[in-house]
Length: 187
Image 1 (cartoon, rainbow, N blue to C red):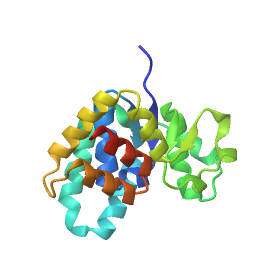
Image 2: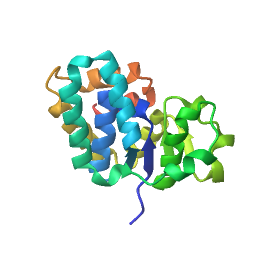
Image 3: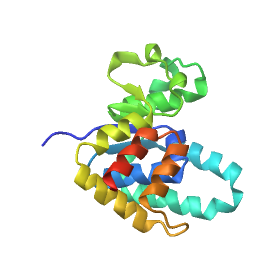
Image 4: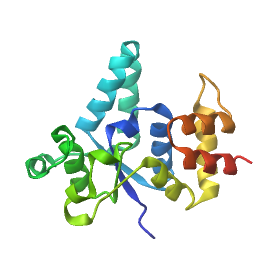
């Protein structure tokens, strides 16, 4: 069996519910594996709570569900790598350290400039935008991906979304190629 692609998620990838849910569902369908650290989990929830303090209970529940659904996603033991890394923003070093330690193929981030290729040691980790990676994962098995998308849509209750609505929402999040794949699958 061919190993599935593995991605370490930066906090900005987990911040928005739809891409977070899509990633988790693709991982549960065994189309990919995802990784994160406690620091990344803390960062996206803290940033979301700053915008939506009324969502504290829901975010605690979401995080617990993520951890329960994908216990192998949690990466730890990377802290010793942090001092040896250099990035434009030193506060991002924990993300790179955890990604390197996790054995991921890629580090998914919306902020590519924060992780210049010259600053990623060893060349074994690719830093990429989630849109590119999601498309690569989704086209591996379009039938299974369609099932994943249908399950995601069925789980959304407020508001209920159709394929076109989901694609439009992903477009707004700069996941335009992912949105196009979903539109195509939904036809």
